[in-house]
Image (cartoon, rainbow, N blue to C red):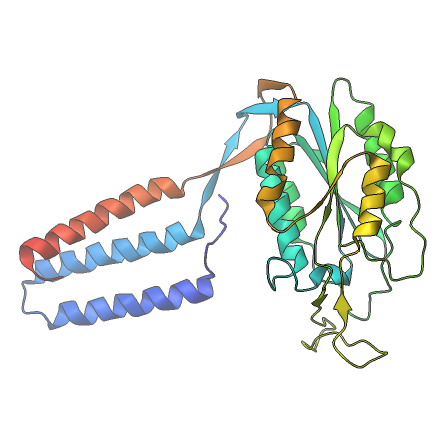
Length: 321
């Protein structure tokens, strides 16, 4: 069983504990028969216990599930340089928060495809080879952390080229499959390198997009050097450093790959593109020897609703807790 809490247990447990203690005090002060007090405590304890479990969002494993498979290989290439933590996505959110939201949206909409993930900053790394296990790819995204300020050595959009080529050639060798690429970056180059051409890779790609995150006005970046939580300073001005979206570089990569360029402000902006990708794919149902996870929160919610109805009836009829 896996859990994916809605709220941190550090918040939920103290709140539920306070509620439970409050109920116990109220019940003990009442002049009721012992069995009535016990019944009240049991009801409320069950409700709070279910609230705790529902917050955990438990999922159970399913083996050899029948799944809908698409003939699509989806490759994410994600810029994880420090500028991707600039705070100018959808207001003042970090760009990487938007990347996570958008990629999760793509994973959900293209469920049944094969997915792969490459990240790059000072170096490029294949975090996940092509797999049908979308959850493992989503988990790989969650391992991406902001680089240490002292580790960062400037940004280059050439870094992931060889790993991209390796994964695209691997996908192209599969029969009757379409290869879709999402190149995700803010387009900044800060190491004085010249952007190389990606045109050679176009022959291996059937669709996708270059997704730009950030704004031309730019955003500040919080320092992450192990002890300081201040904003990164521009050494030339001693003011807060600003990272701005460079659409020119991203549009050049999009032109080389013959895909669309999009500046993303919300995940739903890629919806029309995903619909187009799905309409051009073939689908088959298959009994797959793999592990999937089924969210059972809704089942617990039914029991929780039943207990709340029971409690409401008790209050109405007895005019007490």
